[in-house]
Image (cartoon, rainbow, N blue to C red; front, side, top):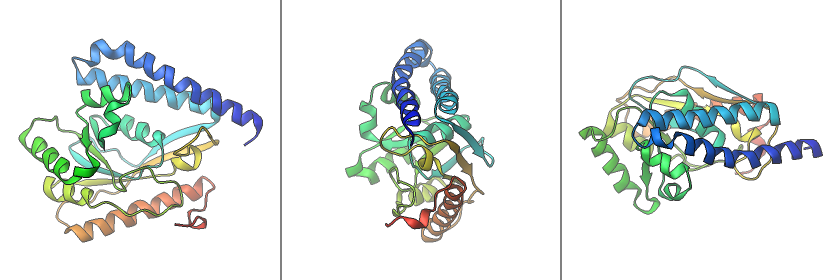
Length: 246
């Protein structure tokens, strides 16, 4: 990065957090009493980030494929904070499965609760998933698009990490269509640090996986589709994923 790019990336990163607080505060009276208000707040903030990252650091955000509108399971690749916002904004009524620790994060944690995101205790992941499945089936949570990060965490471009069985458990027990999502955003917006690189950040909704596959077959199909397409998108952004070690 040139000195000018570093300065622009720094200014972009610095403005992100005060704006999160400000937008969250402005929408709070509506969001507290309405999930529509909470979603509108989160999407407003996300669009602010898309706009500012385009003119401040040269990242253009692009959603490809067909975002589902009905009740489905979304199994996504996760590379940085940017793909969270892009996927959420593309969907009408999304909620995330997320680490329990995130609930303690200012603004993000409060809005996650308002949207009925599912907080998972890493040490008790199976019990948390079981409770979530029961809540959905009993109608205690609004139907929508349930997003799970299939590798369980952010994974840097080119790094190999196993896909977690929790996604297959949800696919099996909910008996829902699963829509895989590929991305290349980590090439331009790394998972750590303030570096930002110009280019086109993409999240792509892939062909759905219909219910009925056994657990092993589902995991194989999911990983193959997401990894193959994510690698293509990363190459499109100028990064060769096979060059990094595991």
